[in-house]
Image 1: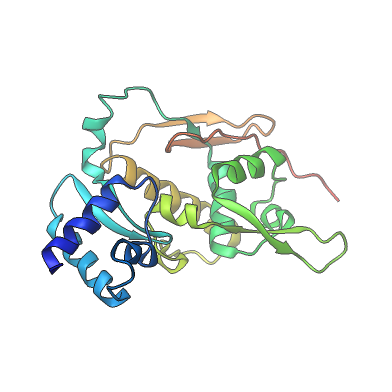
Image 2 (image 1 turned 60 degrees about the horizontal axis):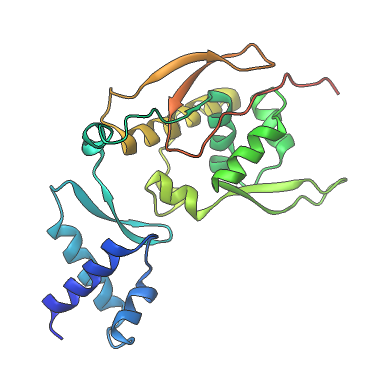
Amino acid sequence: MNTHEAKIVIETALLSAQQPLTVAELRKLFDDELGPDTIRTLLEDLRNDWQGRGVALVPLASGWRFQTAPGMAPFLERLHPEKPPKYSRAVLETLAIIAYRQPVTRGDIEEIRGVTVSAQIVKTLEERGWIEVIGHKDVVGRPALFGTTRRFLDDMGLRALSELPPLESAEAPAAAAQAAEALGQRLIELEAPAGEADTEIRTDIETGETAGAIDIPPDVHAGPDEPKRES
């Protein structure tokens, strides 16, 4: 099998796959006769072949996959005109703190945000597959330590946490807000062209906080925030 034929096999596998495929998985297509470096070279060649088109080959944390280019979103939405759910700033800030400060406990998140994080917010992020318990802190009560998942990186279009947008502010509350904005903007860029995201202002239940709600992919539902209780 020559290089051109091998590229066609890899391309076909990636286009038909439901999930990203790793180099190890792609090697199975050739009974492991092609080495990992050869597979990576073919992937980069394919990536270049698809540049400038409506679909792009991208490397993610859990492997390689084809995905639609951001600029195609408004056209594809005409086939599925329903609006995606809104995600409150409270939820985005919780996710952002976990992403940038992990591993963190729920108490750590509350300390940074200054409000109690509702169980619904944590449950929502877990159900979305963006966060998970990665351990327990060695203190009284052994609270759960949260971290982000590979799916979080995949949905953000990232290969590693080091690719998260850098933060300018070092102050905890400001950094949390900036991180939430950065993640929200990242989601917008993946779903729609810059400046065309549907953003609305709504008030979080139980707090009265006014927060921007940002369109994100389906399966996400905003959870309420609660005022932090005095200890």
